Amino acid sequence: MKFASWNVNSLKVRLPQLLDWLAGARPDVMCLQEIKTEDRGFPHEAIAAAGYRSVYSGQKTYNGVAILAREVIAETSTGIPGLDDEQRRVIAATIGATRVVCLYAPNGQAVGSEKFAYKLRWYAALERWLRDELQRYPRLALLGDFNVAPEDRDVHDPKAWEGQVHVSEPERAAWRALLALGFKDSFRLFDQPEKSFSWWDYRMMGFRRNAGLRIDQILLCDELARTCTAAGIDKAPRKLERPSDHTPITADISS
DNA sequence: ATGGCTACGATCCGTAGA
Image (cartoon, rainbow, N blue to C red):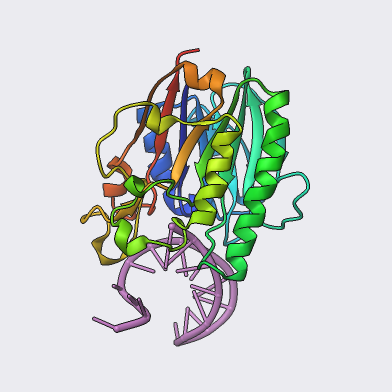
């Protein structure tokens, strides 16, 4: 099973790139974030024609998440139980024997802001929920844009970013709390090139300078991590005309 | 220099992202 995740920053704009990428990479499960489209405008048919079923929780202008899969998608749920939230950031579904959670964590804007407080509340609710979900689902995977660079090696210029949103200690602690539940960061199960990132600022030629952050991750429960054979970042879509600011990430599971 | 792109929904600029 090949899992993938991509913050497309508007599915409407990126649909041709998504279809091309699916045809080449052929993931079994694809999680999308920032689709920025309402459910009634979701390109269900184009994605079906590419061989994928889809479930989604969309929203106009902002946020919006979706799960695509080659096999039957069951038990779809949206949002985080116990968190009253208008923003469409979470969708979960079962594909085969695997439970998949697609996440788009809040940005947080700036440390100390109201949006930062919301980000930490969101993470606390996520952790509480996943603690229960791990009991229910022995094969649980979290894929998405976590909006946290977990370690300094996930940051192009740690000095410049020190203490800033996405790298601050409260955010990193919230992210590590997921590992403490028993998840593994699939990317770090393998040797990886230095300066590996999944997002680059549109401004200041961020991609050309490799001025990026690794804020997109695939977290696997122990059972899935044990059978994970590869994990990586595909930078190719970031080089296209009109790219998303994020690029797809993948993890392969042998079971 | 606290900006610089990009997408969106509403204009002919403001909000948000990271």
